[in-house]
Image 1 (cartoon, each protein chain N blue to C red):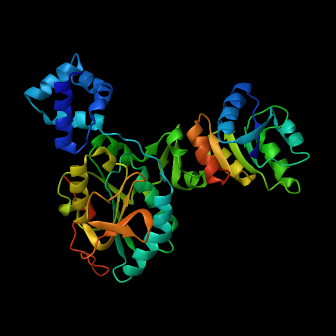
Image 2 (cartoon, rainbow over the protein chains, first blue to last red):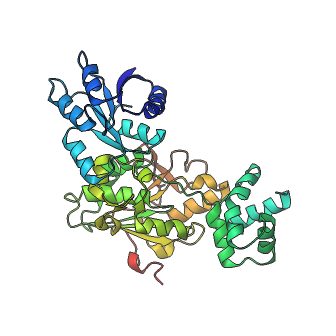
Image 3 (cartoon, rainbow over the protein chains, first blue to last red):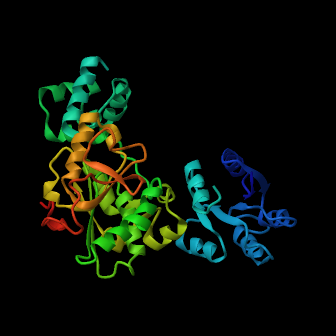
Length: 121
Length: 291
């Protein structure tokens, strides 16, 4: 099973997305903000990160920049999953190293498509 | 819905659009025609059908047909037919058309436009390879409603996240409030026109590539044969037909054969295979169906 780190400050979102990821046979770990997510990457990197943008303590873009600056931090596939749907945010997310970008609201088919686009499925 | 009414509607649909409704699909008529009944101020679907029995007014018939035709489409749907187009079909046809430097593509069941626009995106991305080439995409559908949406090239946030990488989205679309619109240079690559697959396609000219995906599944065997042979009559000798994943020519028509062992891709069966570049004079795309 591929490992996936699910980063979102919304418990409801994490619950729904966890079920979707489990149906795609991912082993899911959760984090409620970017700081927790970085800590979760301390020992080993997940293969995939599903990443919200607006979170307390450390937001998604800050986490991503920190992740990519770590040795080996280029490895995880990172997919933003956020309500930020403007072109500027998308550009910023891709420039920071995101592999894909999901705009909320979305459905299981979109998540599956995006995971397939990046070779995670 | 009683049997007589179902058979009346099913017969009318088959005659006007080729759409085949199995006997267990009465629920589909009831659910799809409810809005049509309301639009035409009928108190019930029974009343709507009663009106059709008295007189088949063109607009009423058109509204019924449009409501019953399934209009679902995604960008780069099923992926492989588009990978095949980019990696195999386009290079092969370009080598065969090196003199004329011209290609004509027909999307024969274009629905809301995602299929022809997916091809347009590929052509746009291959612009340097296609410098000096004229590539026309004609996209047709029986439903004028979906063609109107397709022409506008405006899609919801959900629609642009199905089948499109984020890189393609930002490269080929502009954000319009909560929607996304295909950029003008992509919209300009596709000509949308209404066309019924039961009609004679000869006025459309000859085509090098025909996409007719996920529409034959709604036809009975006789209509599938009729439509496939009709398509064969407007394909250049070495043209390529692309069908949906659940569709095949085998057992339906002898007009086509497999193409390079590619699943879902077909060429005209011999002995009608002709040397490359043989195209009859075709009406310019802009003149087709122009009112």
